Image (cartoon, rainbow, N blue to C red; front, side):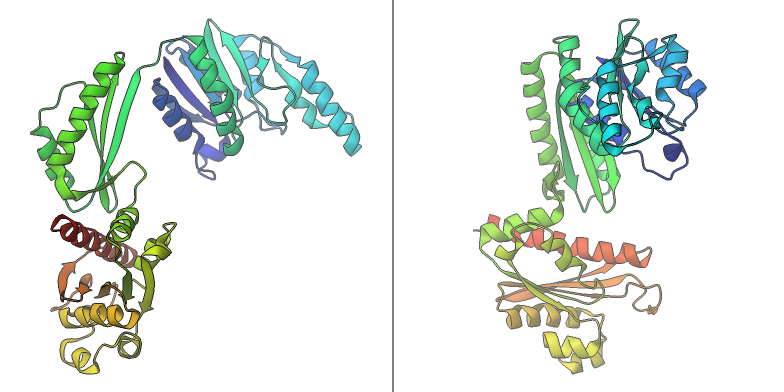
Length: 416
């Protein structure tokens, strides 16, 4: 079925509140096999709400409306629906009785604005009159319209628990078979990814999407078919070919993060990791420890920002810093080797660099970063030159550190 989502609220159009409900609804409806024709966000204006409803009724199979169902003066959805669809508001007696019992317990005034929640457009069917969460369905010109609260927790509950099953029953068998996978990649430019996948000449029914999500590029592989068997076969073949084309640039899929991939590799290899960080200020360790179970492979480390602490905590020889500078191949290697030895880890990683905006020189400009990875048989250091703000450089340094760990662990695993 083809649907439309309308989000209502001045707080949305003013930017005070981020509209997360529409995105959630679109994703859940898409996964259920429906197609979203349009999504709109409008303020608390009865004329605009009515206009949006009338336009949607003429072009889609169903409509989701969120927001404007509360008891305050700026909650105008029911009023707008009543005017636009010529459906006078009428009290839902069950809801009204529940509200009045609640008001009696509070000893509130009999004309409390909370009673507004019970007045719905004629023909409206409340989802659950016994629930304090507002929401109802209205069928107009054979088009089901679902009215949901704008509060995200309430909206998502009603959408998943009530609306999606109702849509399934409304037109049985109308949903397309949807297969989608998101590949998360790092290290290849979006243009190069596009070139490699275009060369595959995938069937027209396979839709490829490219989404730069700093600092990664995410690639969506999607097929929507009525024939479940055909869709599944085409999808599996397309995914296999995309994975081959992108190679080790792909670190995960769907909800994976780079630190998850590194964690799995460390856990599977039985190796323990320790980290010495300077310019990243503990960001790499923070990302590693965001993963549940990271205590099974991460020992810890040190944020050795000052040169004195590089020597005292990590074991970097002061002479190295004096001769080569704190930001150098030699110091990155000493940090990786030193933290590995002091923590008795299998692998040590050391990161040192210039995050800016000051501190750069012609020889070592802002964004210069050295990353070392040490094992008992040696240490490999890579030099990088990042650009952008301090936050961007720190993010890129930590992300590249994680990716180098991933590639190192993958190479060791495949070499066994």
